Length: 66
Image 1 (cartoon, rainbow, N blue to C red):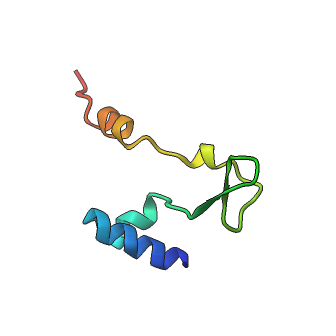
Image 2: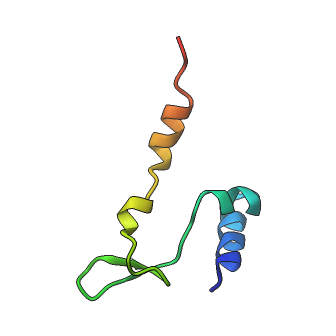
C-alpha cells in the first residue's frame, strides 16, 4: 500500500478530506520481531514519537482562553 492509498483509505473511513489526512502524518507500521513497531521504509525512526493522542489534541485545541 502506498502513502497515497493509505491517505485515501483513512479519509474514506473518517470522512475527512485526503488533504487533511495527509497533513496528520499517518504511516504504515508493522510488528517487529522484538514485539515493538517499525515504520515501513524508516527503520531508524521511533514510531512512538509519531503517535498523536487525538483526544488530548482536541481537548487542548478546544480549551478556552480565559
